[in-house]
Amino acid sequence: MMRWLNSPASETQITHARRLWLYALSIVIMLLLVAPTLIVIPMSFSDSQYLEFPPETWSLRWYRHYFGSPEWMAATATSLKAAFLTMLVATPVGVLAAYGLHTSSIRYGRLVLALLITPMMVPLILVAVGAFYVYVKLKIQYTLLGLVMAHALLALPLVILVVGSALKSFDLNQELAARSLGAPRWKAFVTVTLPQIRFAVTTSALLAFLTSFDEVVVAMFVSGGDNATLTRNMFNALRDQIDPTIASISTIMILVTTLLMVLALTFGKAKDAG
Amino acid sequence: MSSAMIETHEQGLRHDARRERWALFGLSSPALILVLVILIIPVGWLFYLSFIGADGQFSLENYQRMVDRKSYRRIFETTFQVSLITTGLCILIGYPLAYFLSQLPSRIAGLCLITVLLPFWTSLLVRTYAWLVLLQKRGLVNTWAMDLGLWDEPIKMVHNLTGTLIGMVHIMLPFLVLPLYGSMNAINRDYLKAASNLGASPTRAFWTVFFPLSGPGLFAGSLIVFVLCLGFYVTPAVLGGGKVIMVSMKIASNIELFVNWGAASAMGVVLLLLTMLILWVASRFLRLEQLAGGGHG
Image 1 (cartoon, each protein chain N blue to C red):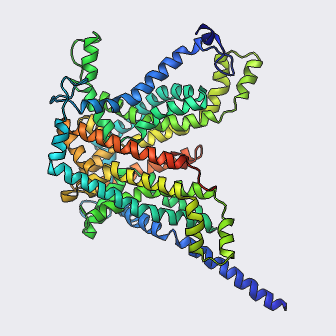
Image 2 (cartoon, rainbow over the protein chains, first blue to last red; image 1 turned 45 degrees about the vertical axis):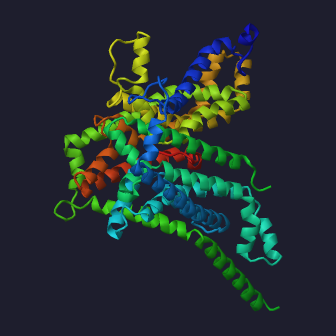
Image 3 (cartoon, each protein chain N blue to C red; image 1 turned 90 degrees about the vertical axis):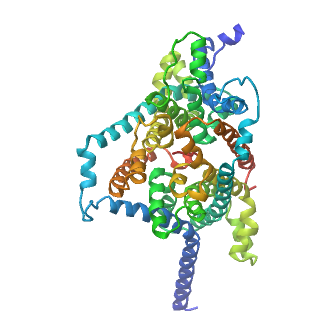
């Protein structure tokens, strides 16, 4: 231990002992980053009205309340449907755009790319208000269609960036080889290129799903009535009082997110293109 | 072959190449239509509405109101204040953490990075809710602090500025730490070796070599945090308890409660222009693609 403390910790020959404050501080920060979210999990199993930690008596009361409530169930169904459809819309549209922009050496390609990733940069409230305005005119406010279109818009930049970066490390000459052997362009793409960027495509699809599933602000404006999302109802419930049911929903959401992100990371780590 | 024939061939080839370029470019048209219909046209429409007065004529009253009315000025002041404090706190907390991570062997750093990524992915609403639970009067923080004798009476930590800041710093921290960690990792460590070979103390080597080299990453990360704070809605709405009113919240209430599209649009236009300006500055220092994967709101 003493030897470790006095050994050099970096290129500047500073010792670990002189850096203990940094280690302690960083560990505290890392704890503070994770703890608040994780603490909700045991709390959701409490039997009490007041969320306590650690719970004095354990129960599934709030889970029963959640699964027994038609409103919460309807909202959950809407969120899952919207997320799934968002994934189905944003992934192919994004993959096509990424492929098109990557292969076409058109002069304004970079400008178009910049335009396609603006949804990531515009403040969400503007996306929400703008979509709301147009949907009222088109009479599609509070429909699943409107919600999915808006969420697909938000997911689009992620798909384009993830797939675009995979295409950059893919050798397009392979496609040329397939085409010189007589394959039409679309066939060369489907049989040669797509299998080699499939991990990036899967990752982007999962990200698209999550984008929609977690989204609050746009859902506040364009979802409602029978098509209110889970996050919209959670947000409204939070403004009123601290309902312990939210703790059980949060726990389920944490599990869903973690599962999807682990999947996305596994696919992301798996090497595309060779 | 005559030269005229070669010319026709060349023309044909050029023509084909151009056609193919446009066909490939056409593949991005569904995406372009989506962005145009759901984003560009609506935002353009809001831009137009912001110049329409209550009487339906062209007017600058919506912008004038933001300058004249104290309540509107207050909202912009609050937004800037909250964003600045949040960014400052994120720098103070995030810099040591990013530095710590950059000093670890890459395998351990990867493990520690999970503590930054986990909250990054977790729903913003869930994290906001967690703080609401922890910071309430009967919440864990008050209970523990009173058990430890830090304070006697429960302190009000939510539904005010304190709660908003705690929640926002927690949510924004990964947006600073991730790019900063990336830029710190890219620093060539031989420079530090050189500095200490030349007799610089570790502290001096840090401040004269490492810190300046991490500057662009820090600057870009801070701008990103600041810009995301400007447009924040959910966390101040829940943790601020109506006492912290940010621009986004005023836009929402202008539409939901007062159905005043002109006022909401004008605020939206100002918010958008500020955001774009800051992101443009940030993009000089950092590729925006690096920020992919972050939810905000």
